[in-house]
Amino acid sequence: MVTVENKSHQFDSIVIGSGPGGEGAAMMLAKRGQRVAIIEAEKQLGGGCTHWGTIPSKALRHSVSRLIEFNSSPLYSQNRLPQRLTFKEILKHTSSVIRKQVRLRSSFYERNDVTVIHGVARFVDEHHLEVTHPDGSVDTLRAENFVIATGSRPYHPPDVDFTHPRIYDSDSVLGLAHDPKTIIIFGAGVIGCEYASIFRGLGCKVDLINVRQRLLSFLDTEFSDALSYHLRNSGVVIRHNEEYARIEGRDDGVLLETKSGKRIFADCLLYANGRSGNIEKLNVEAVGLTPNHRGQLEVDDNYRTTVPHVYAVGDIIGYPSLASAAYDQGRFAATAVLEGECETKLVSDIPTGIYTIPEISSVGATEEELTAANVPYEVGRAQFKHLARAQIADSLVGSLKILFHRESKEILGIHCFGERASEIIHIGQAIMEQENGGNTIEYFVNTTFNYPTMAEAYRVAALNGLNRLAP
Image 1 (cartoon, one colour):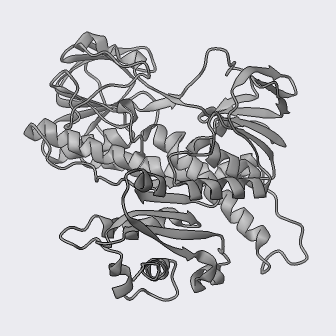
Image 2: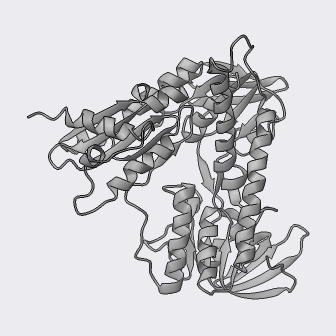
Image 3: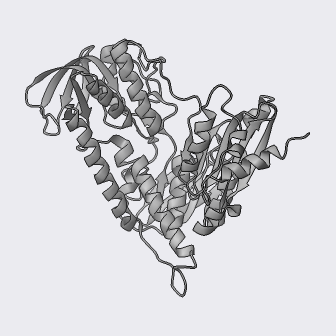
């Protein structure tokens, strides 16, 4: 990596933020010969994805899932008390994964001669930035183009005291200092449901407060219901259609009062309801940009803002707010910087991966969407408990569902619930992306799968669906 010593620097492009979106943009620009700088406000590279979001939460989930698997397996649990681990103990594995990710990502910038600058960026005018370093010194940087990839952070409502040692958000919960026996999770979106699975797997009593009518309402209803069943079956208390009236931090715990009159007390509270774009410190008004009320920027199809030489990618532009999509957005924005536009776009059907226990993953339309659109479809299902590989691995919970057009046999949606769902979904996604008649459910019937595998669920589901078609 190149270190900064002078007080003024000239670059072809400056990328602000080293998460997936910023990394994708910086790598593409550097490999195409541009002089690139990347600015990271934190002391290590990787952004929120590596340090507080995707990587740590999924590493935590993996550790807890393996603990549950060990305790439930008759092979290991005979004549033994259940193995217990604390949140602090499983964080050790998470920390090791983060260190490996930081080393790997740092090597990318060094290998591609990208100047890495640690500090807080602030626009001065259309082509100049000021960067305030941790020691208080300030550098002025100039560039022809900018890519904003500053990500997002947990939303903090003003009436919740996040300085209290027992009130956490999804970032600060990674510094959990005690071993809670009970926890309230306010917000039952993806993050809230994932952490409900994690804490329940550690033996905590969990109250999951949902402001909506059902969990993850964007999912196919059948799979939203399956998640609700399995969380409740594990002992999670789910409370739908609730808003908090007051959250009070005490010395021995946290009291949450709902607007409906309920009073819930627990050792600590995790607030996981919404996120805000990291925009405030950038002074984007100096280049003529105005963020929306969620701290996000509007962009066109080439990720260009209303200022032609300023681009934005990742969480700072909103949907789909996925690490995988952000990396691609960064590459596409870099192509637009280099060539004026980018013909390549995100795939039309972006897979959703939800790392609860068990996992959920889906791609394409839901049954509710197809019914509302009057699309004649049929359903093919495979239950994991009927697969030899699932029986061998003792991973019997879950299923795969394929939605396909009754006449053309085109695959319209795939939904998976169970262990490794986020991996299994990619097989179906690959077929859905085929053109010229290649996307049909008959592919799975006419293909020979390895045996025994979880992928075999596609053949079982395809046969099940085709057998449902009326003559």
